Image 1 (cartoon, rainbow, N blue to C red):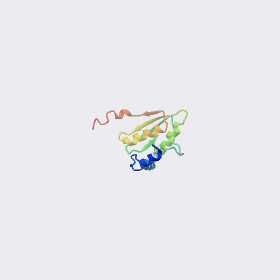
Image 2 (image 1 turned 90 degrees about the horizontal axis):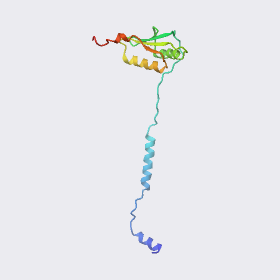
Image 3 (image 1 turned 60 degrees about the vertical axis):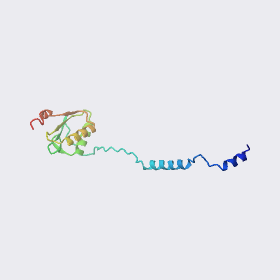
Image 4 (image 1 turned 120 degrees about the vertical axis):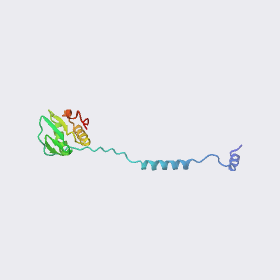
Length: 143
């Protein structure tokens, strides 16, 4: 059968193949929209950095104390968190790092104690000691 006769024969028949070009166009547009809508992943870690401030006296053994009102003390001197971070950074870089004793009061809040321990760890202190744990041996038993 010649080619022209075959074309005439196909003219009367409907096409049975589906046109998928519009489908692909719609899928690409949807893909681009989803990519635009996805937020950029930003992982920000807030780290307090030491600032230049007045240095308190650094001894061979330093004590960080938390009283019942959750106030911080460095060797008996009241200090804020930024000041404590400055002192810890100063001691952490010393050639002969002094021992840091952590001494919370029995009624100091757990949240402040835990965040202070995290601050001490993040400052890079390697010589650390818990002091006075014998005070808490019977904590809560008499109540």
